[in-house]
Length: 502
Image 1 (cartoon, rainbow, N blue to C red):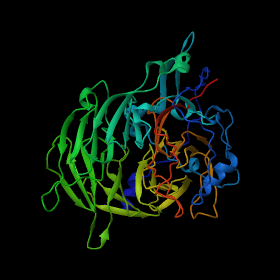
Image 2 (image 1 turned 180 degrees about the vertical axis):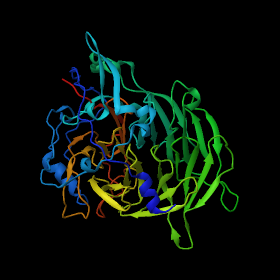
Image 3 (image 1 turned 90 degrees about the vertical axis):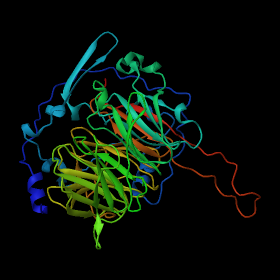
Image 4 (image 1 turned 60 degrees about the vertical axis):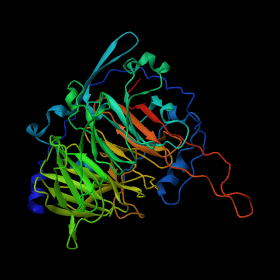
């Protein structure tokens, strides 16, 4: 399969977007969640020289203690730009829309003080990012006050619970509080507690949900993880018990640990990343039976450790593979032939994610302040770039709303940024790619925001924070090695309301 074949396969006929939308009933805006364990938000944001965006944040956002509940938002208006993703967006035909995303509409009920309101509107219209999101609840005690920082958070595919990873090598599952569905009880919302804890033996490299997970079908409630010096594990989402293992062996017939993993779009296979190698397991065949693909051989191909994967239900004939050597490989499936190699990321790839229509591919890297948006209809072309603060080697996750309009990402300084892909892009003298400016950013944590995940159905956003920190060294004139100054940490999971309100 050649590159031109993939391009023709991905392209769809352009059509006008339906502008008709159902007018939404007004909801009473709830109060933010008060927490005694929450640290003061009065710390001044210090701009970091490596990222121009931080200077903009510091100049435009004088954050104060009530910044998370302020009604003032900063909106970027880019009227001088000439290019917009909305003008080039491709709309799928009706027979291509998957069953669980039909019409891209949300239909749910929320209890009010004297009535229950039913909301039925397009997914892109249920969000309200013009106002700063409201913090509803969170989890602080679960992660303690030490160096047990979080390492991402992910909603379950059915939206029933949240999965987190932390530095103590434990995967935690949090159920949503019952009070969440009654706005009148949000002021007294309890702190979230983990209902299931899954300990791994060593450092957790990667983890993911089974893509067809549904709480009504217990067999589908499972998740996979890979950690240092251990096989790939498949865990039960209800009990936290180990269901089975997938063992990878090297050329010396020794067990080797995967550095990344992901289910494919239909959940039938598990892709595991290694150094210049991908190993693929059938989910229903645990053990040591796997397919091996060499990504780099005879000085050609995709080099480096395979760090992330991406799949789309809209086109199951391709897969996207990221490497710590700053490259993205587009492979044909199921034969695994490398069709194109995309280069342009400044740091090693840490996340890849397709847009819901399968036409765009978003990529982010470590120590890389850019999230790039690639147009797969014109392979090798970057539509625009999203700027964020990322100065660490850890994964800083981003997420895309279900209809593909909004992109949300955390920053190294505790700020959460939101972009509207329907807005116009602008030229930048600092970057060769066009820039899409954020429509909203707010101080969500007092530390690095490494985890971002949008609820698959409702207007909720979860975020997690924390990073490894060390004591400052003393000068040569002082006795000892480290200062006694305490280190400020914010290791927490937080739940935000990003819907419309009165």
